[in-house]
Length: 120
Figure (cartoon, rainbow, N blue to C red):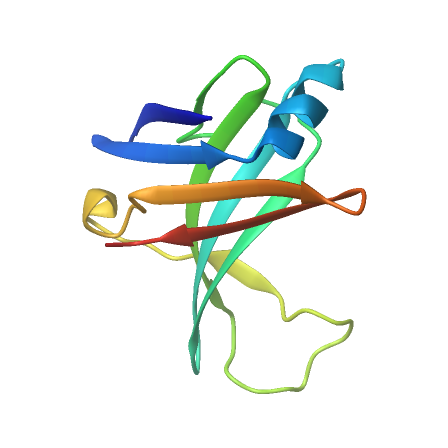
């Protein structure tokens, strides 16, 4: 199923597989989907699925789906950090709309959420 939502002043097309639609319908509360654009020594895109804990800035959605876009950067460029992921902080983009994705695809495969997004 396809949906369109407004995020940062742009239209975001959300494509949900049939399995994702079915799993969302079973949930007692909305799923939070964060599209993360990561700036560091490299640029990475990833989709993070979270249980809702609070209203987050820049969150849009309908029904069982809340969606946000978060540009982040590492505090330092390198591999000298603890854990599997480097510590990140919000990246201060002046014009978020210029970087806000246009398409988000969500699937549910083997009991795990999967997603990807496109900027153009």
